[in-house]
Every structure is written in C-alpha cells, then in structure tokens.
Length: 424
Image (cartoon, rainbow, N blue to C red):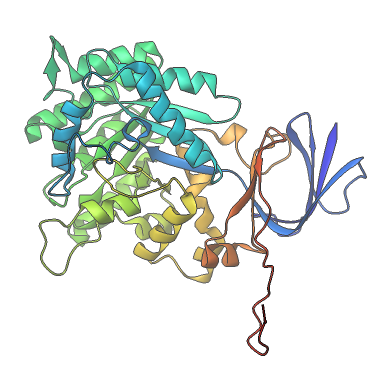
C-alpha cells in the first residue's frame, strides 16, 4: 500500500514538499505527486534522515550510578581502571539488558543507526556476544555496528593467557563489524604504534571497518593519528577507517595540523568527535585557559573531510550525564566548533545524519532518496534553522515506512499573551 506524506519541509530537498512510500521504500519525492488512498499531513514540519550516533558505548550505560565505584578525578584513565574491575562477573543477560535499555533511550529521540563501541578486553567476550545478539535481534528497527574495542589495550592487556589483540581477533570471528583500538592507552609509544599496525592488518584480513579511539588526550606528543592515517593510506584503507576523539589534534601546532589536513584529504579517513564527553573529560590538568577537548571539527568541515558527532556515553564512569538525544550533542558541538554561519546552519544536521552514515558505509541504504528504505524522522520545526536554534523535538520516527513512535507536537492550553491577563 502506498502512503503519501504532504506539507513537509524535506532536508536538502528545497523544491519538494511531498513524498510517497511504497513497500517500505521511498517511491518518489517532489511536489504535486500522484493521489493515493492514505495521506499523512505533516503540517509544515521538518523531515530528516534518522539520527546516526557514530560513537556510543552501550555496554557502559548507567554504570556511573552504582555503589561499586566513583571516578574521583573525573579523568579518562581513572574511569578505565575502575571499569576493568567493574565488568568482571557481569553476565551476558545483564549486559544485554543494559544495552537494550540504552538502545531504547536513544531510539526514543530519533536515532536509528548506532556504532556501538564494545569492550572486548574480557576473556569471555561477554559484551561482544551481547552486542552481536542485540544487533541481530533488533536489525529491523535499529541498525547497529559492533566495534571490537580493546578498552585496556591490545598489548597492555593480558588475562588468562589472552591479550587484547587476541580478543579483538576472536570478536571479529564472532561477527563484530569493526576493529577498534586505543593506542594512547598502551604502555608506551612503541606499543601504541604496534597496535595501530595490527588494527589495520586485522581489518584488511577480515574485511572489516576500522574505528580507533585515537589520541583521546591533551598530550600534544600523542601522534597515533598520524600513524593510523599513514597505515590506512599504505593499505588503501582510508575510506574504511575512522579516527574517534583525536582530542590532542585540537591542541597541536598549526603548521603540523596544516600538513596533516592534506594527508587526511589524500587518505579519505573519517573522524568522530564527542563534544559533550570530551569537553567534560579533557583539560583536567589545565589551569586557565582550559582546552575545549574537541578536535578540529571546523577545519574538517571547511576542508571537506568527513566528520560526525557521537554521544559516546550515557551516565557512566566516564561521563555522569547524557541521554542519547543527538540534538543535544549537535547543539554542543556546533557551539564548541563555532559552526554558525548561514551555510553552517544549512548543513549542520549532516554531522548527526549523512556524515555518520558515510563513515559507517551505509550510503546505499541511507538517505532521503527514491528507491532507498523509507527511514526518516520528523522534527517539530518549520526549517533547519529553527530546529537547531530551538533544539526541536523529534515527534516521529519511521522505519521502513512504519512508525517506531509518534508524538503530538507541543501545545499550550493557555497561550502566552502578555497584553492580557489569563485569569484562572
């Protein structure tokens, strides 16, 4: 059965106000389209492709509100140490329950695509097994990519005779979608570089994507991004490679950054910035001025280097807040990156939609185009500027032509009228 949506403001379709869905796909987008029996009036609301959370730790969800431990310093490295003990003894069902609730939370705000950073430095691979099961169970409603992420290091971790590197490979054999890494958390620069080389080698061997926690530190001597980019270029693997965080790159010397920008464009590497979490975590050793903790997002945008935003954490040992609402992440990100020209406002939603889909290699199945799956969201806003300015609510999420949820737009029982007194 065909459905026709009318009176829509469609992102990046300036001359279209209608679209038709048939058999779960966009059939046509335009104006004055054919008449069909079922018509949905969107009443001038903004239609976007679904939100993409390019970097989210489902397995850490709400671990920050327990009696087990507290991150006293608020630093990345203390959180990693606490998590190493926290995760021990967690059952797969407990992990699945936590992840499922996290997915429900983020989906309720309009996210339909998640790259799930999942710790595999556990001899039982509990989190990886839980994430893969959920990915497969929920695939008709939410698209999840599972990253085999060695939180404690590929070579600096070894328990029960298994290194982090061994566990990454086991996770890939189980069906994880991406090779992860954390070179700045290895014991030395030499070991960190070794891990980067192995990450790329494993990705090529198993035909997997790459997503590395890279240089999530204020230390400007952390140059693992340079190593990752070079190795990806050598293997012709840049378009399959994502560098997440890269906080130190936001603090490096400008001449070095200029040189690297050219190499990033040459390799085709992608970036993810996590603006709320990194502005909270970074700069802990700074007096004033305190660094913002995010990478050079504006420079990436100006140089056509693909960059996306991610939530990263929701109430965990690293970050005590967060709710999975990508509109909040975008709002923080464009302020921190100073992306507020007219052209920026027209394209800022790419940072939580198309750019994330690109690095997840979902272009063939993602977007507001005829022939693609009818996945989209509706915001309670008349255009992109008002949606960004007001951080507008997602009032509907549609997957393959069917509603995941629908809400009523905000209404006021008593309108604000300062010229008169509304008496009760």
